Amino acid sequence: MHAITIEQPGGPEALVWADVPDPVPGEGEVLVEVAASAVNRADVLQRQGFYDPPPGASRYPGLECSGRIAALGAGVSGWSVGDEVCALLAGGGYAQRVAVPAGQLLPVPAGVDLVTAAALPEVVTTVWSNVFMVAGLRPGETLLVHGGASGIGTMAVQLGKAVGATVAVTAGGPEKLARCKELGADILIDYREQDFVAELRAATGGAGADVILDIMGAKYLARNVDALAVNGRLAVIGLQGGVKAELNLGALLAKRAAITATSLRARPLEEKAAIVAAVREHVWPLVAAGRVRPVVHAAFPMAQAAEAHRVMESGTHVGKLLLTV
Image (tube, rainbow, N blue to C red):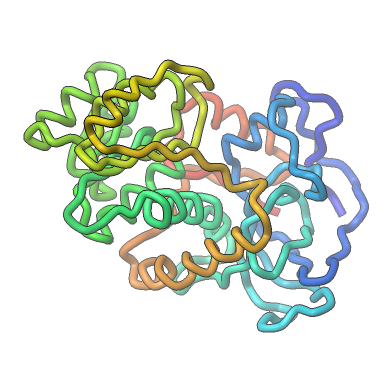
């Protein structure tokens, strides 16, 4: 088969479509004939040499895919050869075939075509696990989503609205904010021109956000705490703004607030399976009903993954970038 390989870390040109050995599904795994994968920020970091796959995972990039089951490993039940699926991966999505733990498979939801389904697994599991399973967003609360026009952001906006929350977003420029509004965002903040803490307080009568989904890390830490409501929860899922910052514990205590920081890729299989099962139960009906949908900016042939990475790094896209086989 062919896969995108990274012989030496570097720029987008480091991604090479090469002939590699076929994967073999182990016990509890299925072999998926890939129709599409999607580009995530983690793939860019891996290409640059900053984010190695966890032990035992495929060395090829790609944290999600869609396709058809080509073979079943020992001990797999509930799935059949030919089933159309999408999957959460620890790696290997940038390839023609990938072996996937059965617990990380999802059926392609009703109303979504096979290729577009590749835009769902990573963003849906990330948002559901952090905003709902960990931070416990409830109807009537306010959710602030940083990077509202990103793949994760566009999904967080929709899921927040679907459960009855007020959704605030930060994004760069009026065009991206307009797209967020189309998806249901109530409070639109241009981080290039506006102070998100002041804007959020003004829009919420001084209360702030009950839940904040943050991709920036250190750069936004102090201001995120300022923006939290009493009993607020800050969920950090990215470090685009650095890894170290000073934290005013007094401010956190005064608000009886909490900060969590999670990653998904290296979690144990049973934890990933529990998240995937929760997504199938709670989110898939929303997708089938048309209340939540994947937002796709563009699709590229898998062999042109370098071009997709250039678009990702330019920051001009809204939603997901797909790679098709």
